[in-house]
Amino acid sequence: MIAGMQPWRVALAIACLAAWVALMLSADGLTLATVCSSGSGRVASTLSILDSVPLEDTLSEIVLRAVLMTAAMMLPLVAAPLKHVRARSFAQRRPRASLLFLVGYAVVWICAGIILHAIAIATRWATPPWLASESAVIAVAVLWQVSPPKQWCLNRCHRRPHLAAFGLAADRDALAFGLGNGLFCVGTCWALMLVPLSTARWHLIAMAAASLFIFAERLERPAALAWRCRFPCKAARIATAQLRHLAQAR
Image (tube, rainbow, N blue to C red; front, side):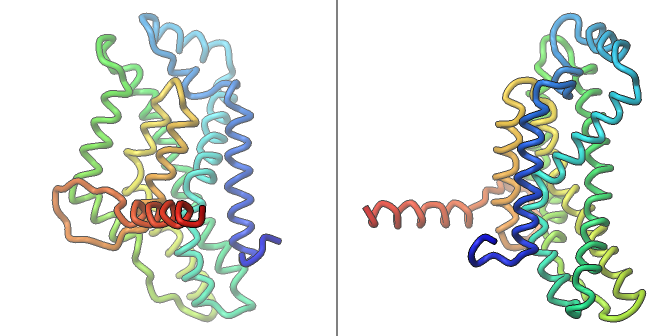
């Protein structure tokens, strides 16, 4: 057991690491980047790939990647709300409440991941040859990042609702919290998630960069709704302080 970490946190870390390993091992398989390969024959090559692979296999691949991406990128964000669920549950109900929260959260994100994969594929098809689809997706991500609806979703991710302690009401509240937190998390992160999905090259690097940014911005406190540039200042301050500490230790 990792010293100082609670068992449930260790389980989240192991699941997240396993998802990253699985994504790296499957990088050479039928990935979204392969299906959505760019070039003059974009649509023709995509259709030829889909013709050569059974549709159910293609769909199962997309579902699997949605599951793995959810585990790899979103599990670090679950720790804070899951801590709330566990703190508001009696000891004998904590495993059950935790599972219900995670199921609700995962269902929302897996469904969103499938939709985002479809959007990324459609974007590749619809983007004119003279415009890189990655550029269009990045522009959308930047626009959403500075918008008031993005801040509203981010504020709601910090919400910690009252949870019933007994019976079916406790189960309902834990599941509803998972579903709601997942929905607001999707609202916060969907545009950033599209960037690695639409990147044919450096896909895993883009995923890692998006994951770090998403985690860092979740450290920020709720703020007023406005059009403005949002940067994870708290994470930057923490990183700067750690670097200074290491420099002084030397």
